[in-house]
Length: 516
Image (cartoon, rainbow, N blue to C red; front, side, top):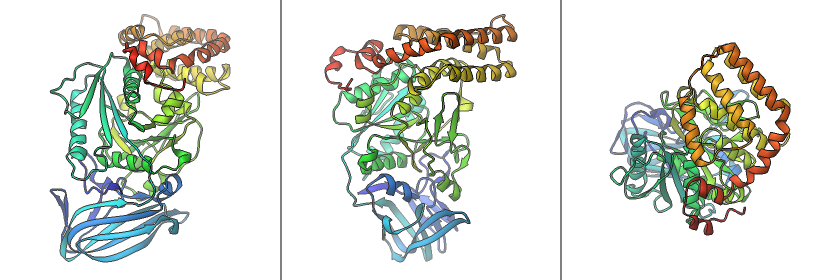
């Protein structure tokens, strides 16, 4: 079967072409055909079109790999392996062949020692055309059907572009491996989409505005009520993605070894304004602060492609829900996400799954980097939700950890003289002190109150002192708050809670088995 297609260029003009191919000499792409003038050459040693040998060998059943090109004219084809050593990058030509029109090269992954491999094409004196290319394997695969879930709130332009990308790249594609194997859901928290806005292959689900947590959970519930799906791919509404990423994640989950069948597959985040710069591969939460992995990597650089695949097995690892694939069997075992409204739902859910998170070059989305995107009012949810999830996911999370968490942020905000952020901090700490998350009607009212929050007449010193006083009040009763949170958490994972929270028809209760 085809694992994924080698695309010659981006689907969108704003994407970085060197994430697809690198060329020397005169080349062009006309009607999806790659044209090489005499003597020109192209390399697919790129983020989307290279093949991550070590990860496919470690996590999947793929052992035999076939690289195929269809075209016209004479050219030389090479399969090259690259390995990062102490002395630097080492390249080995694994296979080389003179071709007339087509090329098929087979590689046994068990017989090579490299980090990544990629094809190269060198045109002869007559020039050549390449119509199509891809990676194939005959290795054993499982069965998989993928449900794509978008959560959106009044971002019709983004959603329409993403749905059009799906339509062009999959449903109108003559041989997409995804055709017939996916279904797309759009959870509409703004209730602004109608039949004129979306293609007929999309299912739109109107939903109350209960944030990303409420939207994605509604999508998960809808998917679980249809027993045909094996995986759920959560996508943010304001991303851009390559169809290649969907193909890679689909083939990857098809070929996963049983030991990794319940791992999440997370996508990297590439800065949409600097479309070759990775902001984040994944990240880790330690109860006080976040460590971002793979940050500021120029993905046009070969050495960075290899470094991006290095794993360090750290605790607290999580995958962001701008692009995250969840196995249905994991969801049934874990239960549903927490009603966080926004911020931290993806972190908590990954940690609940034991930080079993896989990443792979080529699986990513373009998105606004978070320092540019974060609104000030997000800070309320960051404080409240990250305290909740830390209590739930770290068994030994105690008073000293809470003190580090709170004082770190108080000192930071005091030095930045940010009075509004201190107001959000006071409200978040006060709400955390209750040990409860609000019901849906209160969640909507809470969001309105957070948005309306403005700096009071209190001076910076007064706000800092109030925050310190509240911090030490919580510190004194922190064990009791933690015990309450842990005792009550189980109900949030179950369908009856979410049925009431989302105001759903209770008949779904009979078809959703979450093993809880």
